Amino acid sequence: MTQTHAGIHGKALTALAVAVLLAGCSTVQETSNEAKAVAVEPAPDAGFIQDPKRQTKRADLPFQKVWIKPGFDKSTYKELIVAPVNTQYMLEMDWMHELSSANWASDVKSDIAELARYFHHQVVTEFKDDPHHRFRVIQDPSQHKQPALRLELALIEIDPSQPVLHALGWLQPGGGTAAGLINQRRAAFEARLRDVSTGEVVATFADRDSQDVGPLDLTRLTWYGPAKGIMDRWAKQFVQVANRKPGEAVTDPTPFTLRPF
Image (cartoon, rainbow, N blue to C red; front, side, top):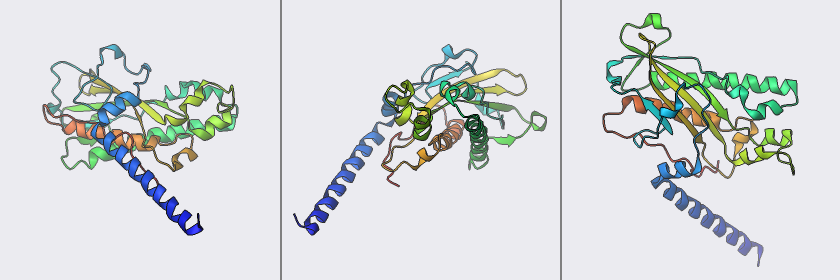
């Protein structure tokens, strides 16, 4: 085969591969809820939610576990406080205990604190930028003038990415079971929704999600990989759920799409 023919042949194969991948993505888009249910198992209960067994999966909400107090009417609430994101359960993850370098462990803990601030910022920003202005976001209970809710979030899991697994020796033969995390790229949270005036928890929900798959995965240059992209999606979903009308379903976006760059 001549060099020219080889080049043309290679381009044809590349075009065919892209077409097949795009076709596959189209199929996943049509069944995104089912695809996530198969690909992403709920995270084990971390303890942030006091009574997690009463949570169930609801077809009309995008989160894997949900409990809403019977008779709770979200329409009566006009203000929202977003509490700082809890990270204590992240710091208890098994893989973190394997960090041999004190400096590296310190860096990871600093990263977790930064991710918590990022998650909080994204949630607040999404509610403030909500064109429907569903909630007035306030900083402190003393500021509230109308019935208010407090959203309490906890990051409970972020899978370490490939560089960390290499460094811990988990990608070597016999290096450990955590090597299976390499392609999962998941993050998980638990949340409580609390009535500011009474202090009563009126709803809880939890979710584990994974980020988009792409041939070039630059997110693995950091140990927390695509976690920020997952947090962006959660923040948008919180606003969608807050705005949903009775009987309306909020579905999960396509969990896997083609992103070559």
